[in-house]
Image 1 (cartoon, helix red, strand yellow):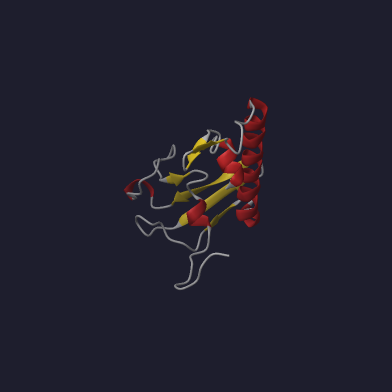
Image 2: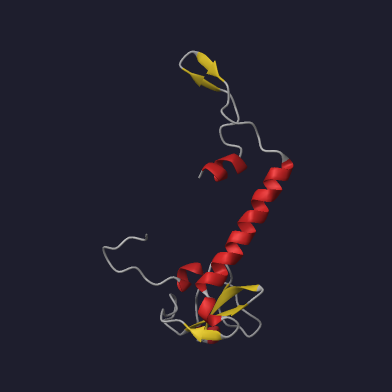
Length: 128
């Protein structure tokens, strides 16, 4: 949250504290630091994608979770240099609110597919 606040230029303006004007705790980040933060965020996103789909690279596999729209089988596809995608096998009849691939099937691109890749939470349990 600290890094996000810095990237979004939060707390970079002086504030009124009672009757006194208090200096901002931070100054805006320089352009190079914003680019570095974006580079690190992309690298982290790609690492998470590789870890989440580690057992499916470079092939595809059927997920235990059904399609949230039609209940059809979902297939995750991943390649070493590409983020994963999830496709509904139902085809054109699936009414999911997501884009279609070249064959008319519903497909979730990264990072929209992440909730479909994570195991469902048991009732009463919270994520670690």
